Picture 1 (tube, rainbow, N blue to C red):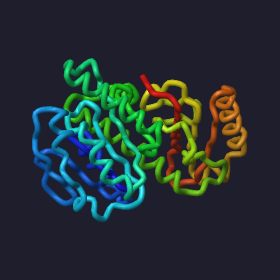
Picture 2 (cartoon, one colour):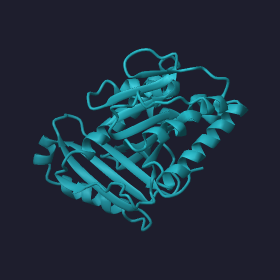
Picture 3 (cartoon, one colour):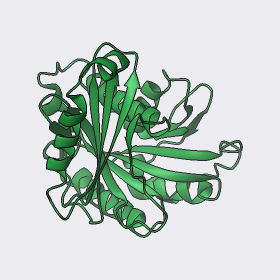
Length: 278
C-alpha cells in the first residue's frame, strides 16, 4: 500500500507508517528533503496552494495499487489535495485518511477552511470519486489514550492511530479461523468510515471518531493460538457478543477471529456510514 502524506500532519503520520515495510511512503510539504519527498513552495493561504498545485507526474511515476492519502483538515496545504488526487486517480484506488483537529483551538480562518475541506472530501467519497474516506478525531484519540503530555502529544496520538490501521490492514489481508469481514464493494453507499479499538473481554468499542448513523460494523478478534486451542467457552463468548452487536436492525455486523502468536489479545472495529458527518 502507498501512504501519501500531505502537509505537516499528513507527513508526520506517513513517518510513523514508514516503520512498517509494507508501505511505500510519499510526502508532500513545504521545504521537504529526502527520498520520496516533494517540496512545494510556501503560499499565503489555502486558495494560493490550490491555484499553485504543480505537476506530480514524475513524483508519482511508479505509483500503483491502493493508496491512503493522509491530510490534516486545518492545514492550508490540504487545499491542494483534490488537485493531487486528480493526477493519480487513474494510477491508484484512493482512500483518504482525514485527521480532524480540535476545532475549538482554531482561529476563524482555519475553522472555515477545515469545514470546507471536510465536507468537500465527504461528498467526493459518497459519489465514489474517491474510494472511501476514513475520519479520525484528535480529541477522540486523546480521550482513548487518557493523559497525554504536551511534549510528544501528536507522536502519541499518531502512534495509536497508525498501529491500529496497520494491524487492521494485516488482518484484512489474512485468513480468519472463524467468521469473515465485509469489505466495501463498488456499489456500496457506505464510504465514510472510522476505525477503533475493541475490548474483547468487556465487549466495549472505542471509535476514533464519533460516527453518526453507522450502518456497517466489522469486529476483529486477534487471539493467541494457545487460547484458541484451549479455551472451551471462547466460541460461545464471541458468538454471544456478535449476536448482541447485531440486535440493531439498521446495522449489518461482520466479524473475523484471527490466530496470532502474541501473548496479549487485541480487538479492533471498523464502522461505516452512508451519511455526511457533522
